[in-house]
Amino acid sequence: MERYTGRILVEDAEGVQQFVHEFRGRRTFLPVKRYMLDTGEHVRRIDERTFVITATGERLTRVDNSD
Image 1 (tube, rainbow, N blue to C red):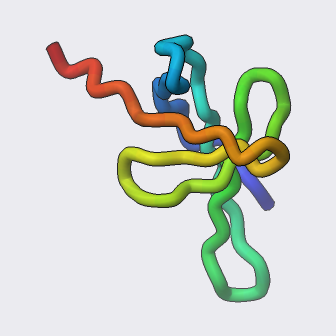
Image 2 (image 1 turned 90 degrees about the vertical axis):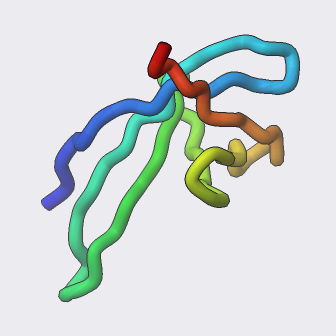
């Protein structure tokens, strides 16, 4: 079973902001995370601050909104 666990604000190279949505589940005994944009495009997490749109290779950077 998969569950929604939250969203992460990111921006592309032009500064356009959007949300990456995180889903968590399990396969057998292994935890699995899945990421997706509002548009439905699949996203892969590179590190704590960087994501890549799977289909295009476009990089997205996490926006630190802890003003």
